[in-house]
Image (cartoon, rainbow, N blue to C red; front, side, top):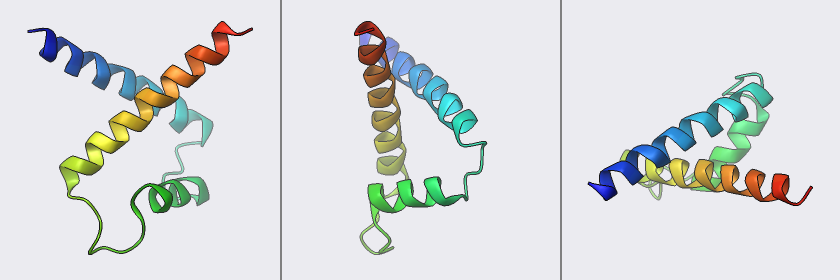
Length: 77
């Protein structure tokens, strides 16, 4: 049960972080930042790109990480 709650908590944090990042970039998902982010995260060789599930998990990990870093920076003020 704890693992399921952690799974939901991580997804909720990721969704909130994604909304914040989307607002910051004006939701231009095909813009320069998002293209750069996709290329640096996964490369541009389709043969080496991870499958969809691995990409989703990597995105969740990244978004949770950004949330944690923002929390750390807020606590240092």
